[in-house]
Length: 488
Image 1 (cartoon, rainbow, N blue to C red):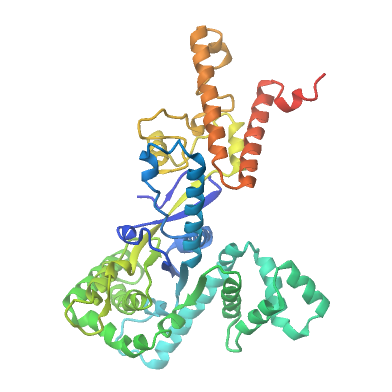
Image 2 (image 1 turned 180 degrees about the horizontal axis):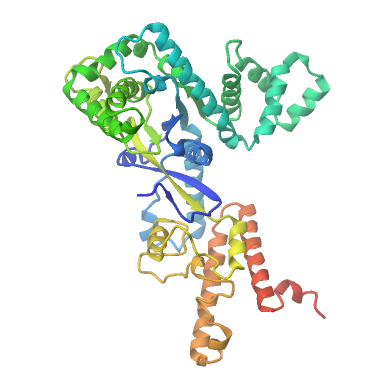
C-alpha cells in the first residue's frame, strides 16, 4: 500500500495518522504525542513529508469524532440558531483540546551508532564514544537539512529565522534602535527576547543552539511542541538512567522479548545483507533494537505518552515491549513494570500517511487545460475510492443524490453539458434537465461555502468561484457578469 495518495503532481501535501490504537484515544484531551524521527533511511522523516507531519501533529493527531446524533435528529431543521451555537461550542472545545496537546519530536541520532559499529562484542569505551560522536554528527546534518520544516508552525522562512538567531547571538552587541525594530517585526517583547537569549547555552553546538531557540520560541508562542535529541531524551528520567542497562538485558533473557527482537533483526538483515552481509546487520540490528525499544516504549509510557507517530508499521519488538512492561494496577508484580490504570491510553502506535492535492493555482490551470483533472497517480477506480474516504469530496457514498465531482469536469463543464454540436441535437426536455442539474450544483456549492466559519474563507471561496467562471466565460467568448456591468 502506497504511503502517499492523491495526484503525484499535487503541490499541497498533508499528513494523517491512523492505527489500531487510534480508537483508544477518541475523545481524549491533553494528548501527548511522540513523533519518532529516523535520521537516515526513511524519506518520510525529512523534507516536505516532515513538514506535513509537523503541521498535522500540532493540529491534533486524533481527529475529533463527529456527533452522530446530529445526523438523525428529527428536530435539526427546527432551530438552526441552536445548531449553530452547538457547532460553535464544539469548535471551541476541539480548539481547546488541541491547545492542551503536546508533541515531542524525538530525533533518533545517538542510538544510530549501532548501525556504524563493527561486528565485535569487545568494543572499547573510547571506540564506542567515537561511534556515538559520528552518529550525533549525522543527527546534526539531519537537523540542519530539515531546520526550515520546524519553522512552519511560526510561518518563518529560514532566512527570517537566521536573522532572528543572529540578533540573539549578538545580544548586548546590537544597536538598541535596530533591536527594537527587529523585535517589532517578529512580534516579540523584551521578556520574550531575553528568554530566547537565555535558551542558548555555552556548550551548545551551532545546530543545538538553533534548536534551543526554536523550542523556546514554541514555548513563547504557545505552540506546544519540543524538539528533543536522543541523549536528552534518555537522560530526562532518573529511573530510566538507573535501570537502562537492566532493561536492555531483558531483551536477551526474556523469551518473548528476545523472539521479537530476533524476528525484526532477521528481516532487517535480509534487506541489507548486500551492504556488508547478513550476520553484520543482524548483529547491529539486535543492539539497536535492544536500546531503542525500552527508550521509546518503556520511557514513553513513564512520561505518559499517549501515541507514537511514525511513517511505518509498528515493529513487533515495540508491541511486545508494551505488552510485557505496561500493565494495569491489578497485574502481578514484575521487575520494571509500568503500572497504570489504563494501559490502552499509552504508547498507541499510529502510522503516518500522506496525501497530495492540487493547489488553487493548479485547479485554475487545469480547468483551462484540455484534460483538467487527470491524475498521474490514480486510476478511475482509485479516484472513486479515495473520494469516498475524503470528507471534503463532492462524492457521497451513502445513496443520497450525488454531486458531480469537480475532478470530472472540464473547462466547459462537459460532464453536465454536452459540446455545442451535441447540444443542438438534444431534445428540449434533456436540455432543461441538464440546466436544472447545473442550478442544483451551484446551489449546493454555495451552501457549502456558507457553511465555512471564517468570513475570510468564505470570501476566498467566492473569489475562487468567480475566477473560474471568468476563465470559462472567456474560453466560450461569453460576456461575464462583471464585464456586463460595464457594457453599454
